[in-house]
Amino acid sequence: MKTFMAKPTDVQRKWFVVDATNIPLGRVASQVADILTGKNKPTYTPHVDTGDFVIVLNSDKIVLTGKKEVEKKLRWHTGYVGGLKEIDYGTLMQKNSPKALEKAVKGMLPKTSLGRKQFTRLHVYKDAQHTHEAQKPEFVELKGARN
Image 1 (cartoon, rainbow, N blue to C red):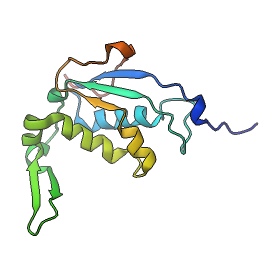
Image 2: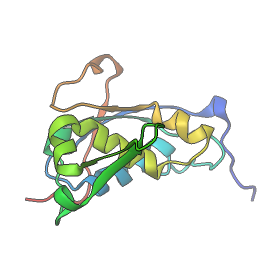
Image 3: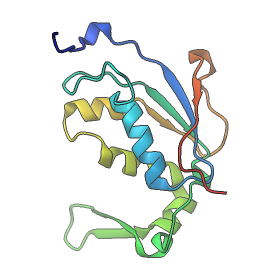
């Protein structure tokens, strides 16, 4: 029996909608990254982009467990001397919650041109409204919701 290798011309892409209400940030990010890379499909091939499009709704309602709102920090450097900036995740979630989810998902994708291409298929929205009704997305239930 031959090993199946997907070809870029054979890939069928779907659109999925994910509701992130009351789910921890890491659980949402890891399950979304699996869909973006195509690891949820039986036709997954590591060197071919077999992933789907993902729309994440309600990013304002994502949960940070433990003391992550205060202790976990996002750090970046501006490129200038003394330009190290940081913001804690509690503040980041209030100001720009889609960015927090995007950073988490991007860290779980491959650090190659393939991963950068997969990341472009992620769409994150703060509330339950999105502009992709024409693509007829399917709803996906994520595991790990908290009550």
